[in-house]
Length: 320
Length: 251
Image (tube, rainbow over all chains, first blue to last red; front, side, top):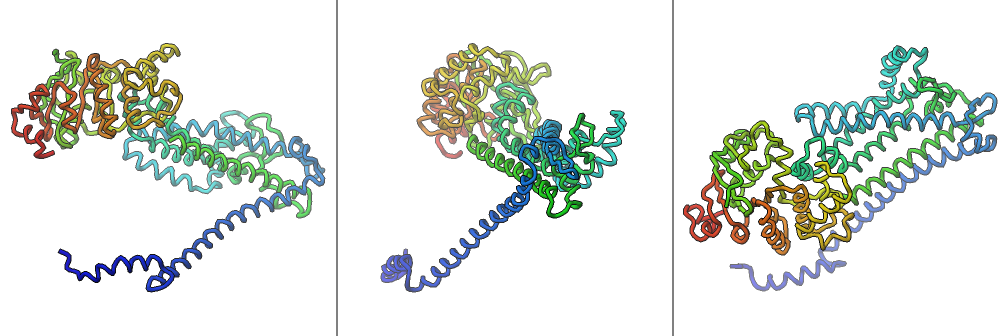
């Protein structure tokens, strides 16, 4: 059957062995080239990884280096625990802004998470497929709308509406900002949750139905728990976006350095205060340093968020 | 043996596809009935009409009648959730929930309103014992069900199905994803369970049907070619196509 001559057959294994051994002979060129391109590629990869880390460290260092100068003139206690922000008279209490950021983020989550999860369940479980094929791209487009546009929406539609509803003279404040942020993060949270819910295997649903549960019970007792880590991931992404959002918040929060006594009192948060004041302060002043320190605080908060995301992802991967 | 399930002139369509053609069949109580036939012959489809799992597939249309204990399960006043509670199902791929072993078995009872810790403990223990899994898992009921082996997972699914006290147990190729030893365990289990439950199993393994069932139904292209006592069907089939299939000439 094999028509090859015997000597060629006999030579083949030896040649093969020779080419594997390498270092000389016809295989050398290719091996050397491979070795070179491998090592160059490796260096390039490591260099870009190091570069990205360096950029992050530089940003952190830059913000910290300038921000920490605040404490030359302001005590640690005053900055973090005093609500008296009056830089013209050398009073630098940032509590209002820290409180504002935390309160705004929490309020946003309280409003947006239930809505988003309901939307996600609706999209993934209830909607007929033709409607789903329209809604998903629409939500994806909403994610990309610039935040300043959402700010306009809040300014021209939401605030007059809130004024009429509550009878307040001014409706700027935490609630207005939280609603605008909710509209902003809703598409993000609901689309990622939607993906998490859609990824729950059909076999879990089958098992649940076969035990006599209805659709609602199946969603609440099986599907949502199984999609839990994905939904948490979506919530934290939305939260990170809400914390760092500046433009939309500036336009509706009122930008007044006062502790809010209600949801409709004009106040300020870290981001809005930085962006409103940074262009009007002297370069080498404590005021300037304090704004840098506030930026550093924001950075630390959002980094912690990202660490939390990683942690949750790992845990989710281990569970499934 | 008394017939528990009666199927009369059943036709099922997936859209334009005629999946079951004029199927008439009687399934006896407290015995094992096996559905055999080549892939795509409609045996799983018929099984899934018995607990109305086909309802969830869009474009499914059914004509004819399926009676369980004299009640037409496709008539308007049948409560589908209660039907599924009474007609349990075990799937081809073991599909325990990503929860603890305990919570998997307790899922059904909790669903149907049982809350007491003591009562749940008892149901979980009895169901796991009935599924011959208790001795292997009794010390770590809180462990994730996904940490079990495939065969253990399948027995857990059987325990989960038994926990809601069904009368009928449907097994849809329940051993096809398992190794031979796990398969043997499930077969032995089925033998024990038949004294209390009516079991209907789909299998692509003719030897399994011959080993465990009392009655065998042979399907081909959506039709029932022949059904009779297992012994007779395998030793003296009355239809030429049945003989060709069981002697391995096709399928």
